[in-house]
Figure 1 (cartoon, one colour):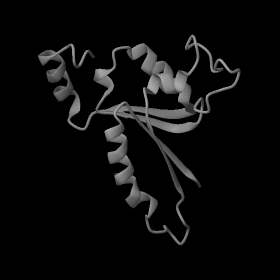
Figure 2 (cartoon, rainbow, N blue to C red):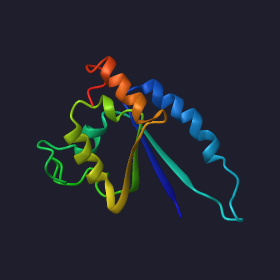
Figure 3 (tube, one colour):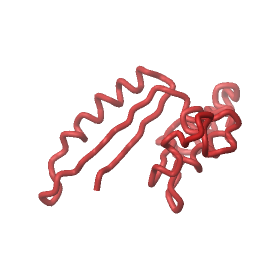
Figure 4 (cartoon, rainbow, N blue to C red):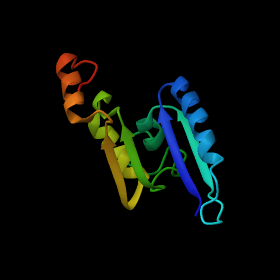
Length: 130
């Protein structure tokens, strides 16, 4: 099965780091004699704008009359170490729900855990609003 992973970050430097990291996955050895095919889409952009890509954010159809190619595309979506920084959590949740397939998985996580994120929020609620 062809595997597709998309990485989105506002920072082009983070996208460059991701491009370096995925090189080893692209060159991964075969598994059980079957070549694993990986396709990484790495984009420096605002995730909400990229997914909703239309004038009102309420439709799956963009201004050109077609979908933006991300609606219902992914089996799963992971938001790692950044959810607390989003100012508009309703918009991010809408975008996440739109890009994952029916029955897909949305995972929101931080490698240092809830307590760490809560402490950051308490220390500087302007930087970590949620």
